[in-house]
Length: 148
Image 1 (tube, rainbow, N blue to C red):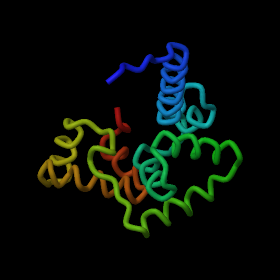
Image 2: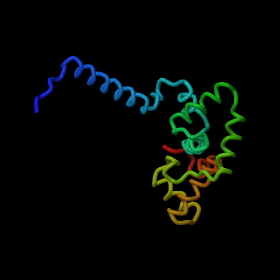
Image 3: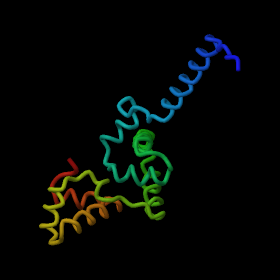
Image 4: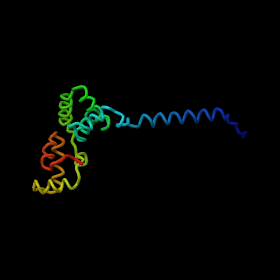
């Protein structure tokens, strides 16, 4: 069977096309850099928690970084009331936060368990419940600080 000669130019063109397609897919898969996003920065200095961002990301079908940006944009455009309604809708859909979404430390759970007279596991569950229901002030009041 005779060997076919490959055209080096065609080969280079195919490789370049494959590489550019791969780079495009990688770029589309990456979330926007939050540091360059004004909405994200507004979110970061707002009253909204990571749990709130998670609840809204579940409702909106986006990742939490996008939800954080949208929260900041809503604050900037003075549509804060819309966020409250969206958070309520997310809760009605059954979206919840767990301990890992609260950004509190284990030592905080230990302190709360002693204060509330419950196990550490129960304290973690209570914190997640409070934050899911938008009552982070209860936890802040008990600890004297927010998540570290």
